[in-house]
Length: 368
Image (cartoon, rainbow, N blue to C red):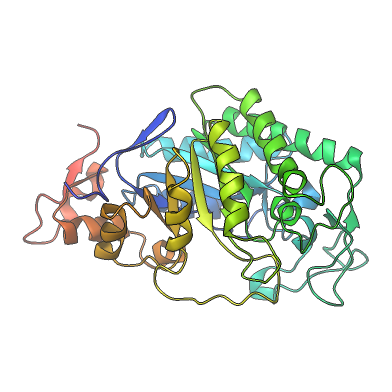
């Protein structure tokens, strides 16, 4: 058996293979509620044969949305809309499902990407006042975020807890805390965006405090059978910012707390970032972090070819690979990877007749 198609245990859940579908914002919710688009989009991905499907970043508060089209988990109505999507998927797919929960902080209140993606100031339509660890805008001349008070920080921790409980109530098997890509938790981690002088700023211990407080609070509030992982940006790609050495310390802290996996990305905090984009460009970060923790580490970033994924896993550079844009482009990537590596995948019986000539043993009935 190839390493890519070998089982992987994430805490209480065992995946059939090591292909993860990363969270991908669709900006197609209405007032935080998932829509028919999410049924179609996520339903298709749930038929891909991947080991785990992680729903897109879902805001823990309305002001934590990147855009007005973001999914939310801030009340019972947004939970119920997500539950409907989960229930529809469950009719036809046993694939484990998780959701990423987060808060955009100073990167909230923006246009949808296809409308330009620009920041929207509070006095404009579809705009609102953003929050951040310090009153430092993401872009020079951009809307000024409000530096969070101690009371707002405490409320945010509770907002993450409540969103996590709603995710459990919606029927999901896993929760991923979003501490990457320049959003609120990453903003607290990085000295570039966090210039506080209280218990949540200054030293590395203080800058890690909010992420760890939220992890501890969520872990204590959800059942043991629910997977809890964290996504981080391993580096800001900016001198003087958050970097791999600090990420290693955060990973160690999460590991001792029983984190079930670490999902390793990078960047997103500063417009000054200089990223050397190429195949596997983020894998060295995952590899370095893996050497310091017991929990599984997921690598992501221009991992597009089956043999490429197999090689980095078989060489123990990571424990799993995550696909985002690549699986939007090719929603049957796991099928094609199985064919390339001589493996077999389980699929819904409706698809069994599609196997190409010469690959009649590629798919097995998942109902058997």
